[in-house]
Amino acid sequence: MSDESTLIHDARLVDAGKTWEGAWLLVERGRIRDRGQGRDLPPADRRHDARGASIVPGFVDIHCHGGGGHSAEGAADDVRAMARFHRGHGTTALVVSLATAPLPRLRERIERITEVVGTEGVLGIHLEGPFLSTAHRGAHSAALLLPPTPRVIAELLGAAHGSIRQITLAPENASDEVLDLLLEEGVRVAVGHTDADFAQASHAFSRGASILTHAFNGMPGIHHRAPGPVVAACDSADVVLELIADGVHVHPAVIALLFRLAPGRIALVTDAIAAAGAPDGDYPLGDDVARVCAGVARVGDSLAGSTLTMDRAVRVCVAAGVPVAEAIRAATRTPADAIGARDRGGLRPGDVADLVELDDRLEVRRVWIDGVPQ
Image (cartoon, rainbow, N blue to C red):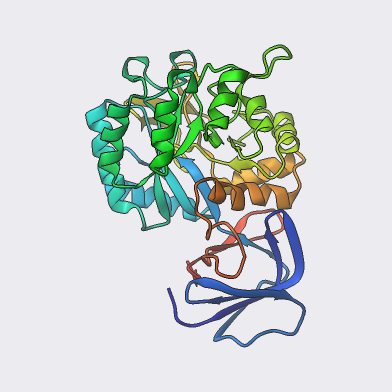
């Protein structure tokens, strides 16, 4: 963080689904101090002429297992390295996801990641398991799945010392007591890897579950007589729907449809594993190994995370017909709000000055962390 102020001018600012042309942004002490439009520019120690390029908030990925050849299941240095890899693709903040593993191993991994939380843009931990449905477990080992009991939850939360931001669970296996316990501890409850029907998912959302883990994947689809968890999430005004927009997990036509069904409530996630930005091959995932071929990761016949980056997710959405400003919101403000990171993912005065400059093809041209160019 620098004490010097920076003025970014002649920019197209994109934030919260809106666009400002011919705009400027004033950054000071790692935060956005002010923004405006026009040629009447405030004084600053340094200036950056964006030359009409888009300046957007840093991307916020709330579901990420790895990248650049590094896995969240590795050492603390691997977690730092995966965060740096994704930073090069515009992700300035992320939540590190852990797949199902034996409890002792899961505790060890939680403790290692907790060392990194608060550095390198790592905001916390997401447990994607072990509280999942065997019917829609995907790449998670059936033998390691557990019911979400207060005892096991207390054990995992105790290892995290407050660093767990989100837990995915199958609500048909979770009592109201468990949901209340997680919410009281400040953990976001996500519905996912579930066989829940519309009524069961709706009940979980009414009790405070606020995220749908990677919509359409790991759950029943939409049927005209059995609408399922996706429709339950769309019908629940406070629920954010994660979306893996790589064109493999969800068809582009369905990507565009979901944005129309739940405007302002889509959070793009990568669900990336170590293979993102790395060659095809075998990579660790939870207590298993994912095989990556032509950029698609699988364990057996099941998709197993992705090789996606957030900048590519934005481009896939736009190619599917989603307006640019809405795709940017889904990569920034919406996921940040979903996990309570209220000063991330925006260009408001007071927000953390994590910024990305995009060219006309939505490729990352420059990244700032705390107002400092990387």
